[in-house]
Image (cartoon, rainbow, N blue to C red; front, side, top):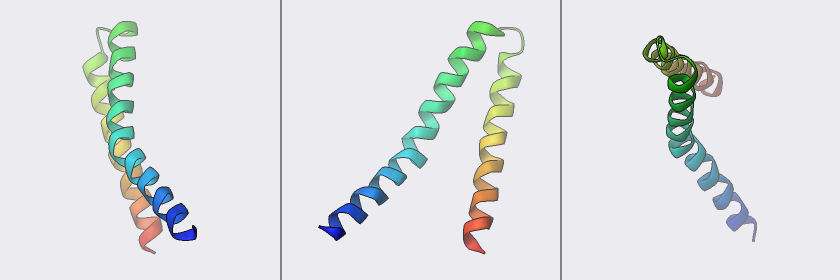
Length: 64
């Protein structure tokens, strides 16, 4: 039973880091386009750069 719990936890984390990020970008893009149509592309690009930066910081924290 412990193995199953660990496996489900790992699968859930992988799902969030994979599809969760994609869905977050899509939802943010929809909100940005509807509320700020003139600067939406810049906001989406900035949001993606922030996500990449967050991943780099987390990766270095986990690595060390």
